[in-house]
Image (tube, rainbow, N blue to C red; front, side, top):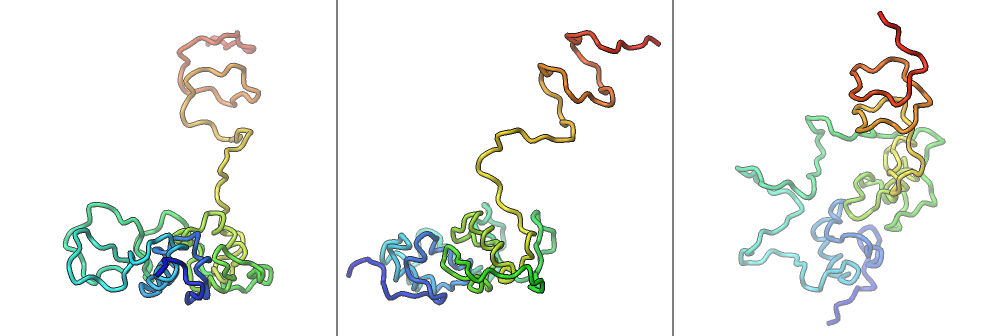
Length: 227
């Protein structure tokens, strides 16, 4: 048989093969696909998933593999020794962590502000509505291929479904640096390697703590008073 997408395929989210074309089909567990769901997806959509027919199997083989098998659900028993390398995908847990995270938690939005509601006309890269994302963590959609801009647009358009209050999720940083330099009101923590070419338009209100190793090029407009 030909190794082609099945035009009749529809996932449990109602998505066709083509709707999965720009995403990683092997990572769809991140948005709730079971192992069986992913098998049916990859088996039905080899072209969209870019996986050759017959490579992705449903049942484990009777003989042990020469290389370790990658499993998406965690193993049922704990290892006696820590792994030598960190995991490429973090574990998902319903329990809160005992230590604070390095990034803020945006909390749960009760959708009680009339000015902060889902955009009914929004469609995501998966062609899902806001309600279609209600069962997922909108911030983790990068796991299947959403770009930072995709995630920002999703959360901005769907605060109720994503449970994130309007304006609390920051936009992604710009890919290109700004043309004018950023002006800071705070002094630099480390001195420059050489003196500035021109005198500052905003002189310091307090003298420097350390002595200069080189004499000034121009005489001071206000000579120091001898004590």
